[in-house]
Image 1 (cartoon, each protein chain N blue to C red):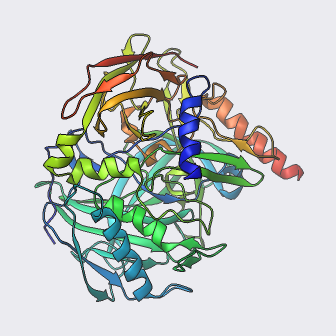
Image 2 (image 1 turned 45 degrees about the vertical axis):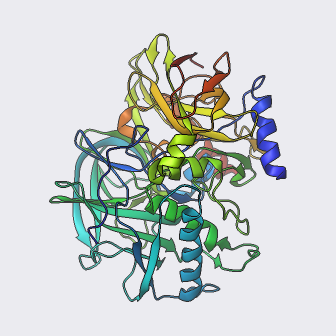
Length: 184
Length: 331
């Protein structure tokens, strides 16, 4: 099966990326369906064989800064498919990748008391970075959420109201959804 | 045809408003500072099918759907792709068997994933030692020719995943909407759009954007001799914008092809474009899961408004347009 090889003679620049077919999650659903929502920094990411050495997963540990929902303690370890063991890297297309030092907000689920996993594969992983202009921490992926809970609304790319949010505003948005859900 | 016409109209209207757009990417794996691009160098691509049925789709039906998927990509004019079904296997489509396997697998922890493709790469040599495609049996599937209400069409998803297996990344050629209780696809002009249509909807044929992408990877000299490319730069406050989605639209044919700025200086090159005048639009990837398209370590900028290049850009046959610069402004 070693019949694939890299090819460098391509017309356009290649890019490392992820790809799969997903069912999309609206932000309210992401918040309400996740058991745990946590903001923190990655302190460890190590890959291991699972499923009788037939699959590779990466177990990522987060040093928790704050829980927006749920609580799993000061540190939380979750799993993502794919990873690297020795010289062999298994890329599970669509799975988020984490490195030590990454600051993230994660939406996690647990199944049967097992190790948590990210809701919706990479849809439940939001990166936190300092804003270039202000230096404030911002969640770089904008929230995709309807302006109201009813009706149909086309998502327009470049909508000026959909911007990266300061971490405090992102947390407020999560809590607002949780409060709305609690009232229903 | 109605949907194609609607997309053409949407792009024309885009001159005055701000709708959505389209693109293709090629698949790669970053290893340190090195980028390993995924491409099959030897044909035919030999694959196995997991011998496992799911309700409404048997393993032979999956084999047939996968066969049609490979055939659809191979039927693109001026590309060199071939494949061979080797047989059924008891192995699941997971890594570790050194075989290319496509099949159903129950992955409840992948709660929103209908299907996905994985690669195992030797990071020393750059060789790909294995590739697998799984379809999540946690969902309801259909192999019926007209599709089935409330079931995902295996033919459509297989075509998408085989596109990945061949080295294609995702296209942004699609539009979604929010409705009470969720989000759904409004329309897509690419098989490689990453968000699934509602169950029962079919998307079984590569479109112009898919064709440009697969041709860019496996195209013959005929393809390269009959198309051209556009190159340029996207800037904000004088600096390059990374992760901007750049779309070209041919007003004569209605074909839409795109790409992304992939470096800190905001440069882009989009190949496989029909010769002639093209409209060029730039927009942010602010409505989706960035990791579905690009390496998140690239620090993608999504904080800008859509913009058009002020003039039509002429693409020469077998050549590259003059370099253009499109300046965008923050939201």
